[in-house]
Image (cartoon, rainbow, N blue to C red; front, side, top):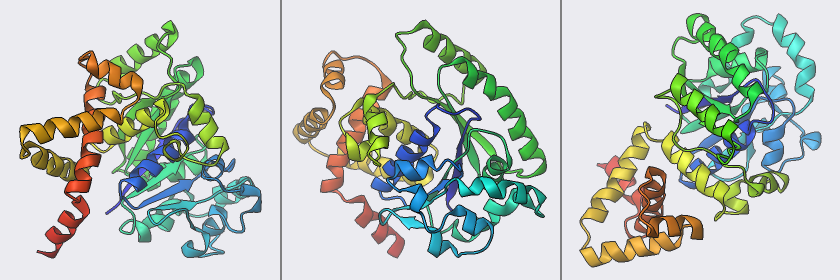
Length: 330
């Protein structure tokens, strides 16, 4: 059964689409089968993936109105990454949706046959709490708040949380609040520091340790129709999103098995081979993060980043896919 997650905040410009795109892209690169759903009529997720929303022949609207089949609408960006696109035509249908029977369940019922096809279904919500966002929450197992360190996004959290409680009570009893991720951060400013303190105080077990820094590369990647991993894999944005998605995966059982597999094989290696692999892994980090490790900074995110680079090297020595396939065959 796939994991369906909505990325949501009823405020534009908070990095919600960027987070959905790069989470989907990283998961697909790691071998997971991912469906990214663009629920925003502005079509920003579709555009971020490089599609011209004005020239799309079919969109999510055609599925909502039952005019086309799923396979006719879905865009296959790669073997592992599929997109359900959207564009401005969806706006005209919102009023029709309000009058339809079981209007909050349209997306859930549409995606139900594909829950076993994809490992992850990630939904980019519009910047409001209208019928499209309700559909996303009803279709999801979990949702993530995407918050930038500004006044208005903070004000948006309370009504969104109240909406979550309503949806959980009346429409989707299995919905869970997965966490809060901070984007567009600059902790040189006192305001960013204060916002993180507030979030940590209010969501002590939900705030992701990883935060996404302000990055020119992230903005450039979207304008080129690429993920940050395609556009600038050695950038701060790539480092931050890699660590966020690995943290996102921490309670995902298959991901934990994969991580444990590499840890077991690494510990069985001779000391000199361990040292060599870690040295190579360190060279794959940015100069900034490499220097921080050399200075022996005790920061969990840095240690985790080194382990990720180490595991990429171990993948070449001990292919996990072959191990998992042989395990399934037993």
